[in-house]
Image (cartoon, rainbow, N blue to C red; front, side):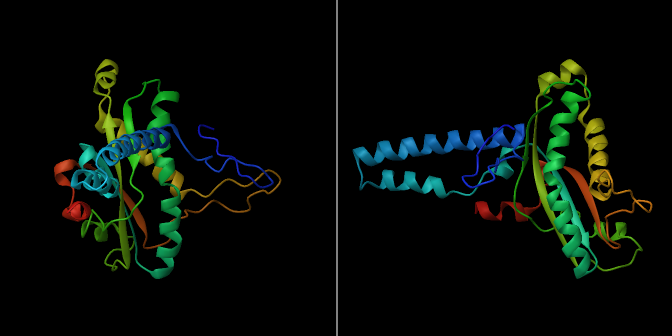
Length: 232
């Protein structure tokens, strides 16, 4: 456990149990950036509390996130459903597994393949956007020809350690696809039964009919205009 924040009530537990190396790195970076802005604001306020420069400095704390300006490559995680029931079941399941995708991209390379810290950052943006795949998603729907009832997309920013990749002779196009397939399998596969509770039938996919998920690698210049709307 990387970030112990213990609950004050019984039974005591770590409320930040799911924090990973990548998410901890993102938070520490934002904490440091926020402190730097605050130090600047306080310094200006002490010297000229009513000045326009000091007031403008405080507004920097409320600026939109620069997530879509920070990275050169992203993963677009599109999910869609053909019915309201499928949306309720499928969207919640996929969203709950997004942190697993971040963990797979971060840990599998280091622990199972010994490739070192290939990714400097794997940063999930916690807000859904209109689908990136657009009309292409409809062609992948199970059964074909069905209409999309609901669709949305989450983005993950990727920062590569180019020196590590060159040293290990790693091609990012190869291993990204491999780990996306592993994550998709983990999303669709039901959990194994607990000891003492034998499974009576063959495991079925957790993906409802008419629902699917698609992960695409996106370059910065390929990002849709809707992700920049908050930046003005």
